[in-house]
Length: 379
Image 1 (tube, one colour):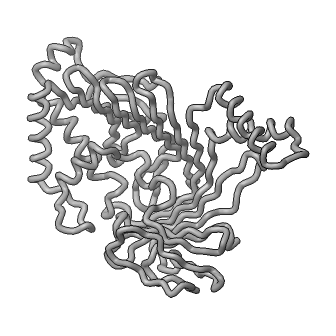
Image 2 (spheres, rainbow, N blue to C red):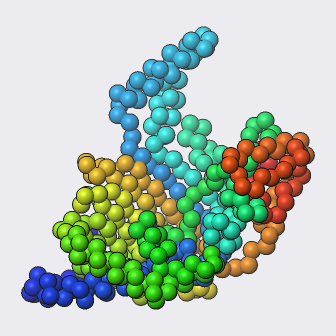
Image 3 (tube, one colour):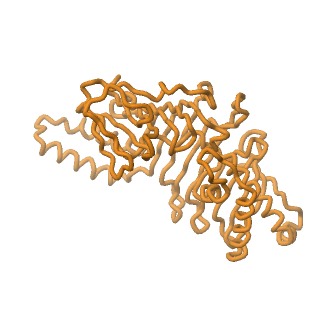
């Protein structure tokens, strides 16, 4: 349990009533500053590279569910003509696969240039652990960017030597948001406070900030809500954050741990559903990136709960390799290019695209700025 340092005097309740607006202003101010220093601020972070290990753990099936799946698989294999089926070994293999489906491991290298989803570039090399064979699969390489004014797209390579251009992006969460402000409430607040004249400008206007604060005050009065610093908590050794809690009446809605001394990092964020925890984001073991002066966590977790039972539904654990971690270095365009063998057919499968890409059928290299994905067949 974290150490808690109360900021209220002995007559805490009495003082809370008469100083609520003052404390609320301080809580809102910290929230605003944390939004300004979020990982998606392109003025603060414009390029980066990280090697990451990730584990995804979901709620495992019950033993009876596993047994039903095993029996279904055995029946299916038997009907498919596997006369010499080693049923005992098949049961072992199926059981391992079923149990491992709820615990996935991934190794990834992520490189990006341009900290905006609509005009940045990103390269991801991702390898998944195969528990049945006890080996790491060959990496899939995914590159995304912008083609004219179309939305970001992805190319994937299939086993039939065909490159498919898709509307969706493959990959992991952006590592530069780890341990900083995130979530829908902060996103909406940021949009309201931003200058908005250019996607490259991440400047909060005084007018926008004041409007946001006024909106907080109006809603607080309407629903009896508060936006308070309720305590100070220790999250890393000798590191203390202000615990900013948003309540509707007496019910918790949001919670943010904000450390102003480390550039408004947010080591913990909790979202509640009717007072019960629903989502939690935790960052630990922060390290200082000397060149930029920015703090980043070596470990990061995203946890999803069932609000009714309190059980963990899904958990994602990330670990950053601090030795190879890089920020705000120049990235050559060649890092986001890919040679495609002549025997590969290229097919455009995007839907409702605003800027259709005309493809001659076979490409040896894609044009600069087009999004694409390489697969294990190139290794």
